[in-house]
Structures are given as C-alpha cells and as structure tokens.
Length: 313
Image (cartoon, rainbow, N blue to C red; front, side, top):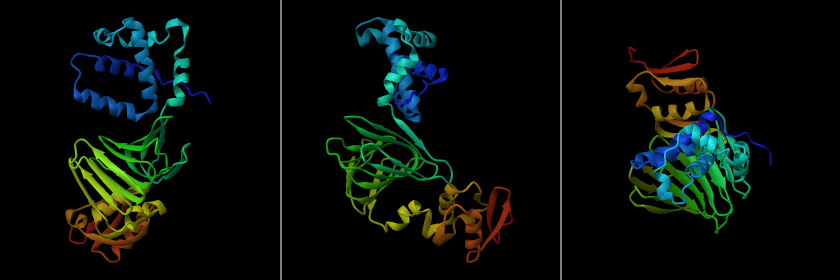
C-alpha cells in the first residue's frame, strides 16, 4: 500500500480542539452535529481525530472514561502525546490508513466513474463530493453535496448505506440516484429496492422500489413515480426539461459550464422551458431558448445574461 502523508499540523490542531469540545461537561447536540460535519469533510480529519484521541488517553493516564472527560490538555500537549514511546505520528497515521474513508470529488462540468473493491460502481455528477468507507463489516458513503448514481453489488451481510446529513438510503444491492440540495434530498430507484430512513422525517422509514422517487425536504417526505428519463439524463450529459421553470433550468445548466447563465428579472425567471439540451455550452443554450421565448441574450465575459423584452434592467 503506498504511503500517504499524515494530515497537516493545522488539521491535527483542529482535531485536538474537537477532543476538548467533545469531552467537555457542557457539550451540546450542536457540537456533535458540527463534529460530524467536520469529520465528513475530509478523510484526514478522521485519521487526525483518532490519533489525537489516543494521545489524549495516554496523556491523561486515567483508566476510566469518566475520569478522562475531566482532563483538558492543550492542543500542543495532545500532539506531543501522539509521540509517546518514541512512535512517530506518521507511523500512527500509516497504521490507520487501511480503514480510512476515501474522498471523491468533481468540479464544475466534470463527471467521474468510481469502481469500488466490493464490485459496486459510483458515477458522480458535476460539482459533487462524497466519501466512501468499505470495511469487513460496513459499506458507507457520505454524500456531502451534489448528485451521484449508485450501482450497488449485492451483499446481504453488509448493507450499503448512503448518508445525506441525518438521512440515509440503505440497500443490500440495487441501483439508484441520490441528489442533495441545500436542505432537500431526492432519491430515484432505477433497479431493485432501497429504504429511506430519517429520525426527523415523517414517515421515518420508506421502502422504495424500481421507478419510485422520494423527495425529502425538512421533516416532510413524499414519493411519486414520474418519468425517469429526465431525472437521470445527467448521466448522458443531457438535460431534459418538461415545462420546467427557467430559473431551475439555469441552475441545472450552470453545473456544467464555467460560463454562467444569469437571469436579470423576475419575469424571465418565471418562464417555462421544454426540450432536450446538451450540457456544457451555456451560450448555445441561451441562444436556443431565445428563438422561441421572449428573452434577450447578452454576454459579459464569463456571464450570459437573460432578460425579458419588457425589462428595463
């Protein structure tokens, strides 16, 4: 296995701060939620936290967890403690690497295929980030942002779990899309079945089968069975709009181009667009819709402005 350098000193210091916060008597639920976000953001965070936690335990030299919680070493003491016994911190991180999560990420316009060791395949859409952890006992993905397709190899002993904040999609083996917005989650099952679980949603558990779509917004969950093609068109670098708000179409098209579409007025944003478009060329998209919609197109460097004929702005 190739050697991977240990996390930076900055990340180690952040991990030390989390040790102190999580073992403090006034720890809150918000602290725990923010910690989960921090851990998920970078696989180096998990490695740094585990080594700092070990260092904290060695430094405290106390057998019980209750006694250790009252001990509050400094960040520098924690980092120094990971060198106890003459074992370098680099070696500690190296020993932890086989169980570390892998991070996969795409930028604007980029898509990526990922093949996992268990036989599963992931396809990340543009502007997507997720982490993957495969062990002998679990298969877990944390979708941090964006949208991905999951083609999961069957393993009834190790269910595959896709976490999206406090919500989870669980399957023994199926194929489905998961998209994450600011507070919304969309799941589309294209083969097999999966369950959607959330302690804060109603209902808390929903079973999804081939052709089902689930939309989760806040504590509300609803399911339907819409045409699948527009929902998975992104996998062929295509956008299919069916009486779609232009503002939503612009948001979708902007995932694939550095030249951004901008809507100049409310009237234009409320127009509706239909059609099949190749993504990645926003200039061509703008001029195409201008042929049959009351929209004026102007370009300013890396921006394409859409405004209605009657707009004065």
